[in-house]
Length: 411
Ligand SMILES: [Zn+2]
Image (cartoon, rainbow, N blue to C red; front, side, top):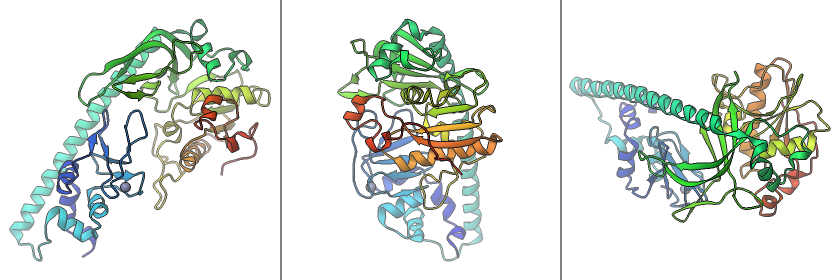
């Protein structure tokens, strides 16, 4: 009998994650707010991180719907509770099924077989119903988030009237030196509440209120679907605001809405055929400062999120991020048809290989969908946020040596 033929397989796979964690006696994992995910000390190596919100992320995470898990320390990973039991207890596949469902019956009587099949049929029905409910809840959450984003965008005022220029200057970007006027995609709100859901199922609370730069994320057809919000310190030199609550630090940047397929279109000149794109607003503008003269007539868009730029990737055995786009994903970012040259800026990042794979996925998707498009991946130019560089958080020195895009063409 192969593993796939084991009659216990389906029951084992459908065991609720919470129940399996109980069986394994792992009581220290906690629910992450907003997500169907738990994190905490690793079930195999015991390694724990710190805060999931402010500090270094927890080492071990598990998706409470699917049982997919991974540890950033010992690198155990798997897609379901069977894999979890195998990793946590060091068991073989059949032994993991025995742990979850009991001994395999040598011979199943017709009654036992009928009972098992009935149980499995009901479990499948319940899973389908749960999935339907989950999708409906997700759709309604998304609709609310997009409505919020549009409300925020409409309440925001043109960037040149407020803190935007001061903020960019504080990050090492002099707006007067940009090859274009201060982008209309960057607006501001003088007193913008920082809302955060701290506990699952509880309403969001206001942790901070102050000036914020509001960047509009446009869908391919040009409607606002999300806002990227950066809270700015009310004190000179107006860098990022320091937001703390209950002794925990919170990021000064937050997205609201649905960024899928969208981009922050910082500058799109008439007749452009080159598109420069980075994940962050500051890095995109730094690229404009550095390359404005070498790339006349280029458009500069911020992808807002590497995951959005990459889209779903094909699963390839033995790699975490294959760099190959899953072309079934119709929601990933695709450049507009006028783009003949796509330049993707690689930000300094703690996982360079993953970043590279995500950019490759973006580049390959674009080349597959836009006839005649050529894509390059280039390191971020130096200049952005020297404070972060000095603190070791910004683009690293060896990545900063390239002054302009060069031959890094993707295949
Ligand atoms: Zn571990």
